[in-house]
Amino acid sequence: MSTHSHHDHSHAHDHSEHDDHARRDGHSHGGHGHGPGGHHHHHAPQAGQGRTFALAVGLNVLIVVVQAVYGVLAHSTALLADAGHNLSDVLGLLLAWGAVWLGARRPDARYTFGLGSSSILASLANAALLLFACGAIVLEAVQRLLNPSPVAGLDVFIVALLGLFVNGFSAWLFMRGGKEDLNVRGAFLHMAADAAISAAVAVSGLVILYTGWNWIDPVMSIVVVAVILYGTWGLGRDAMRLAMAAVPPGIDTARIQGYLSALPGVRGVHDLHVWALSTTENALTVHLVMPQGHPGDSFLQNVVATLRRDYAMHHATVQVDFGDAASECVLNLR
Image 1 (cartoon, one colour):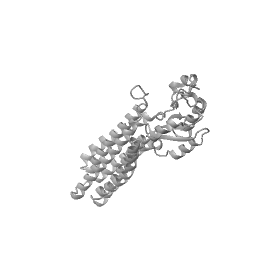
Image 2: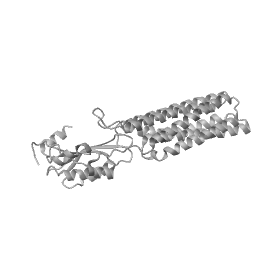
Image 3: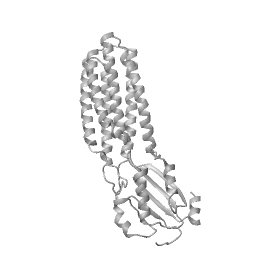
């Protein structure tokens, strides 16, 4: 182990491309440590996710056309509003699908982390689209309350029921992936919101058919919008936090700090940073103060592997400081 100066450091990166270099270089300056096998361990999009998006987009384009045509034929502004909302969902699905495709692309010289962060941008855009659609629905509902018009209730019920089945099936397709991926969660919320709106429109169609109460439809639309806004607020909040490099949901930095502080030979832990690379991947950088110097590649490999396996840190960079007086002075100036 060389000790060129008081400012020598050791870095441990979870990069597969440096694996051979790590085995050759035992110096304290610039040595690299890797998890077992040296793999980068980015989370690839779930198998079949592209087919899921394609199927959902195709079904929703079909329902938009049907709702628009029958909305005109049945003189139903509710169906036309639902068709407009479904169209916004098609755009949202295309955004989410594009983010999944971009996230699967390999890193390059310009985008060294890859394009996974596009999934965060897609989540923000999806939340914005949902809010815009909700505003359009409320505006339409208020106008229909002020100026009620007769509606063909049976046609509304049948077409809305078809929309309910299509959107419910689409939401089911995204349900599993939405637990792990904020971008897919946005797609799921789009489909679930559409299913709820279609259900409300179907019920209002039946009520109008048997009672003639045309005001039921806009009132139910407003209630459904309130439910959608509740879910959209959480999606938008989480996406905004990830975009601002906040600690991702479910990550306990105090627990990570405790693990690192308890490592043998570690006197202190500082500059611990955790952020999201995408809606499924997290990154970490940290300095370990180790007065004994470089602990060896095996130590660093184990730390990186544990951070990935137990703390969901898919890309970990660990820097080792000797903790001498010069280093402490630099830290105090930060």
